[in-house]
Image 1 (spheres, rainbow over the protein chains, first blue to last red):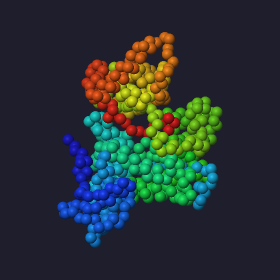
Image 2: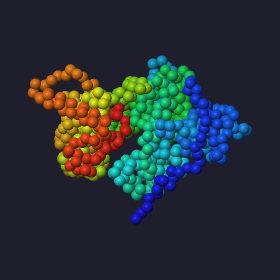
Image 3: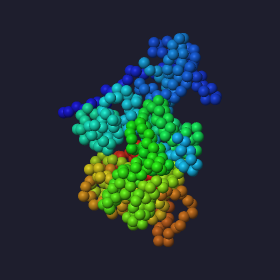
Image 4: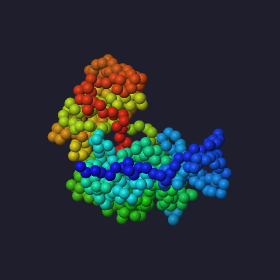
Length: 93
Length: 421
């Protein structure tokens, strides 16, 4: 019997990972991430938020709000995306 | 370049997401990129058709509406991904939100298309074309998909423009160029010209939109009645219908359900079971919204995918499932002789009117019996709300377990309502 291409082989992606984030929510609607647990398992304090803008995560995260953050001397991008009825934070590798 | 700002001239944009479902799947699953991909229904439940395909699948001849096996035959490497409507709905919301930043008049046409009237919003954006280009850029950076935009002075030409160049393109149709751009196109490209209208027009020698535009209105009226005048208006760019305000799309124009059955329907009894099942869901939703239908429309699809619709007014506005089902069966008997089995059928209540307490009673009908039916249906609604849909069912649905088990509520089909509805 002929076998067809299984779509499940193409659904996984290693290029994004979800992260735990501590965030402050203000009554005016602002949402500011304070610290983040990166893929090494350590929690890092976010020193500064450089930019917040709507942007798509092209590596598989989909559309969201991109927070460009500075941790020590490194600039990183974190995406806040909708998943079902919840929101999640993710980063690209 | 500021010609769009002439007072009184409308600027209408029509934005269309290219290969919507397939593009969204490729966005979320990067490994799919570069491969021929299609989004297709579930073959086991016989929803096995291609709903969308990407540009890589196109050279193989994979088309929307094809059966999955047919598409796989043409392209053995085709990756068929099941649809995820929740994700597509979410995406559609992002798209509409983005458009709403430019104008309060955003009218969706299905999940992946919308009109935007930007007439009053152009001072800061200079021209409709510039705004269209800005929208395309934003769609790429913020949503990760490409869109085609048509810019024109009416909705019909704007829609035509967005269909002309794909993907990621802007097409401008204005009062100066529409004769050269629109008129040479085949007549079926015009919104409102379906298969039947096209066949009739072609039989009269009307092949292009230009031919249609130059037909005189009396002739068109004799061919298509009132609809002929609409077609004349559309082809000449005289359409002045407004783009609806955001939010008004929530106004319900029709309530319907259709389903592809687990097995082909072979006779009136089979169709009756399915119609009754669908009518229950349709009438339940009508009662929930406080509406009654004045017209019933049925849609039938044979197993070679020939499709048509027929409609008929109800003797009285109704939200009683048996009444809807009876009219549907009457329509079926008048229009179908079972020379071929049916694969999919649907029922829809249109021409909706709010439930009113005072209504004209008939001297010749048993109104008390009708009222009893109505109360019975409300009681069933109550039981189902408390104990679930399958807690109470009609005995006739048990006659055929395959057909009776269709879940009409979850098999809800999302498609644009007709332009004129």
